[in-house]
Length: 102
Image (cartoon, rainbow, N blue to C red; front, top):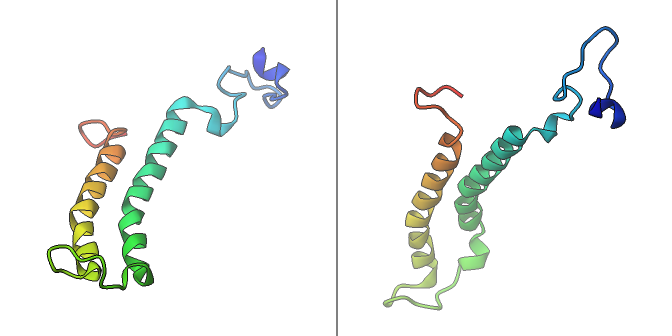
């Protein structure tokens, strides 16, 4: 079998299936779910990181309609954060059945 050729052997007395010889991270559905979880975490963490880095935006210039950069930078993250949260929810719920079961 292919798994024996790759060096992955089943324990003695256990019939190996083709999937049994693969490493755990080699399953396409698991890889897609892992990618979605990572992307969702990045979507949720980006606004926190962007707003916790205060020295990067603690300045008055450039102004937007007379408002200092410090304020409009924070305000622009409100809709961006909502958009990223909705994206994270979509990524998370894509692998979930309608009844909430996975």
